[in-house]
Image (cartoon, rainbow, N blue to C red; front, top):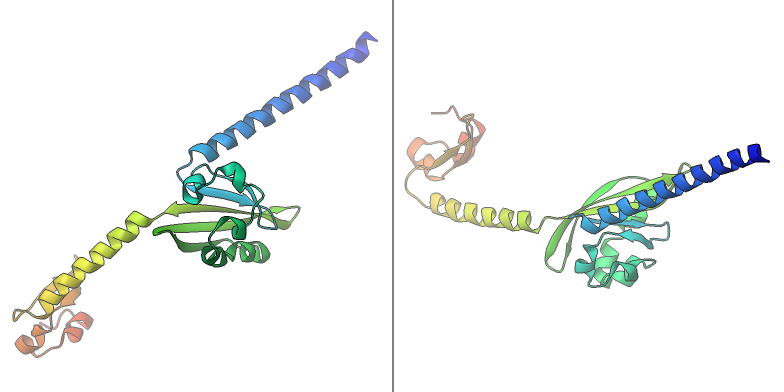
Length: 193
């Protein structure tokens, strides 16, 4: 009887150790979802939320616990929910996609990918990064370039902006009056003069 207790105790110890490891892994995942600066989610094949990062609460205005089990149509404004139907396509096509999305004046780059089980796509996961500041900087740069280009286009002097390798980035229209060559010709061949 004493010998039969040893394998039983070993099995119990292994089971307890496995349970502790599973709990630790679950805790690590929960902390990852709680502290991640990137918006994350995991959905099942019916597009119901199974897991979501804590920061999605700010975006949606509801606690993560209330997101669980809900679909896009139940969570998002209808126009946005229709735009993000790529979730289902990602799962059906079994392909990773990257999209830019806009919601409530904020811009996001989202990567969506299927997760396979037993060789079949069963879940979809997504990561969204807020790129609003980058978009604002790009727009400010575009506006600034437009202002400088307007000034340069109407100057009587020949304005030319060149890259470090010597190729022209911009040549003002006045170059034609001065050289006889158009701005397009200079852009095509920087060695005209």
